[in-house]
Length: 179
Image 1 (cartoon, rainbow, N blue to C red):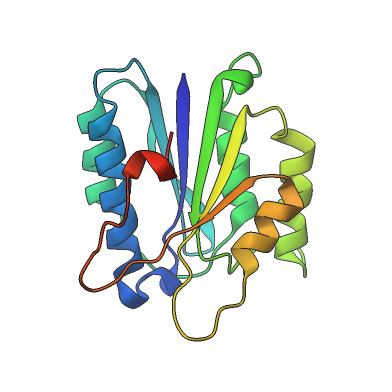
Image 2: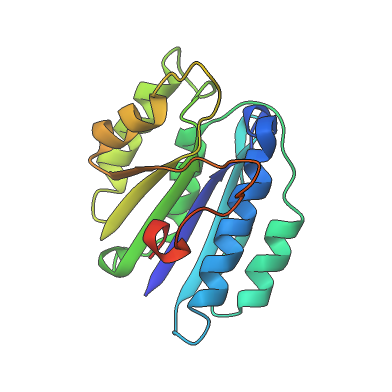
């Protein structure tokens, strides 16, 4: 089994410590399934590009350490992230892979005037063979744009919204969100 994390670490993810919440959620998920033979990989979206944090590995510590080094800033180029995930996936493992996308849905960088549409098109062309894709929406604030849910609908992914509160930074069962 392969689990890929695509993490939006753009500038909008600093607000309300969303990136710290996501890091904790991923770390708890990995810790919970440590005894399973799962290969994890992580890609970050920041500064208008995608950055490989960890290639697929069975070493939980490697991915946790790479998450600790994750920085935030810049714009979100979802298409670049999908491109990197596509490079990491070999065609024979797509049906054994799960992709978890942590984002507020604010896709604002790409190679065209429509970065959102560009990302959706790329996903539909190259990544539809993935066994399971889930968008985990962490948009917060009084005004919500709902772009992560729109992305999930556009690519045919499952959708979950997580809401952190000051009193409870880790809500619910981690397994209910991931895996």
